Image (tube, rainbow, N blue to C red; front, side, top):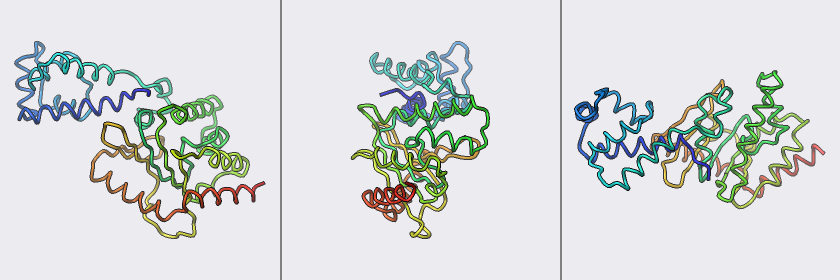
Length: 284
């Protein structure tokens, strides 16, 4: 499995917060102790907080100071934290595409997800798009430069490699009928065939037809990412390619509830496959 630096940063920040709380220290007290211990004395309460909220990466020297303060003395345990920090400081596979991906947080987390659950309204899920569909929709979004279109399509196809790994994440997608209606006829047939053919026990697609009427997911698309040993996260894509990453447990539970309702309202997997086959027949 490819490593996700973003996931490592989340894990390290969470563990450092846990260590501080177990030591019974506030961020201010931690900074005061660190300032006495560290030669450069560049420690303040805000620095501790930034480290714990992933707004500042942890240098090895700073990490060792914190481990001393928190009473982590076992050499093996200390080295495990240092290794985690080194991995957190690396660049993800997508780094060469940061000009079009920005921070790349979602794609980086997607790399190490064990399960991806998504509800999509306007567009088909990126992990399930054909190259022709991706190219058409990217151009429809206003990208006209051929080289940029090619690079955006390339990174979209590279994302899908996670589905061919031996440890591929389970994928469950609920797609609103709106996304199918907005798919141009020139690419619709190939895209439908792909959605039908790609399904397997660990990859399922449900269609939410217009006939359902008002439903729980009308606020828009979202993705829930689950990980083997880390808390889940919800991602909401926003205009301009940026996105909102939600990590609050209560908010995640809310989105899981919405997804449960949307899945219940949608056609079953078997009915959805038949629905797509009928649509494909009409196109043919």
